[in-house]
Amino acid sequence: VQLQASGGGLVQAGGSLRLSCAASGSIFVINDMAWYRQAPEKQRELVAHITAGHTPNYSNSVKGRFTISRDNAKNTVYLQMNSLKPEDTAVYYCNADIIPSTGWGQHGYWGQGTQVTVSS
Image 1 (cartoon, rainbow, N blue to C red):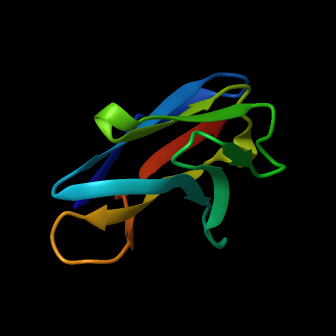
Image 2 (image 1 turned 180 degrees about the vertical axis):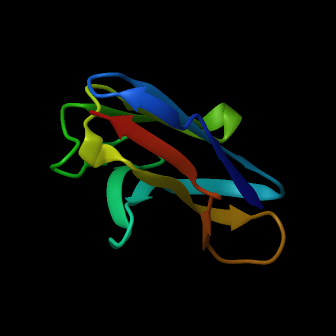
C-alpha cells in the first residue's frame, strides 16, 4: 500500500492550492484520512481529518479556509486551501487508516509529503 501526494507549490498570500493524495496497492478498506503539516523546527500537526462517511474536522488555524474531501471510488483525499497565509508554509503529509487486502488488521500509512510555500 502506498500514498502519493501531489499539488504543493509556491503561492502568494491570499492565493489557493489544492493537494491530492491517492492510495494504491492491495487495499480492502480505507477508513479515516487526514492531512498533517510540519513547518521547520516545529512538530507535525493535524490540519484536517475526514471519516469514511465524509465527516470533516479541522484545526482552528485553518477552519473556514481549508476544505478536506475524499473520493472513495478513487481512493483519494483532497485538501483545498484558500486564503493562504505565510504561516501555512510547511510540508504537508497525507495519512490514511487502511485495512490491506493481504494480512489482517488496520494500519496507518503516510504519504511522502509535499511542500507548500506561501510568500508574503
